[in-house]
Amino acid sequence: MSVEWRLSIGSRFTGLVVCPDPKWPNMWRIQYGGRISDMVNLTRAKEAAIAWARPRRLGGGGTVVRWDRRETLLGAAPARSDDANSSQSVLDPPPEPGRRVSDDSEPWR
Image (cartoon, rainbow, N blue to C red):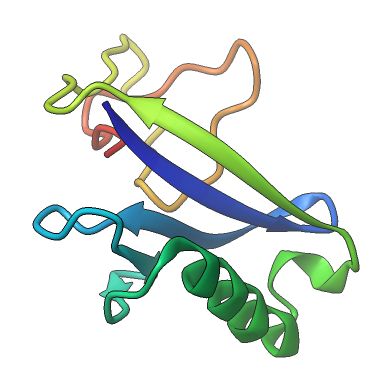
């Protein structure tokens, strides 16, 4: 089982995701826009993500911080769909209920 934490500020997803390091247990990294941070513990990763997102007004500049926990099986297959017009990357917000994810989407880690 793999866990990740997705940061929302206000009502919007910031694009920042805190993921476990695949090699070192209890160490986490922040992912954003194809970049990845150094390893830190989970508390520090969450605080650093908030501190980085707020001055950039990610998430619309709201004041309420929300962390959404996502769990997936390791090696889970990508979502499949007949809708070839939509695409979703790992850092995009989840699709709205009833909206399909395209065949070229990546699996959640």
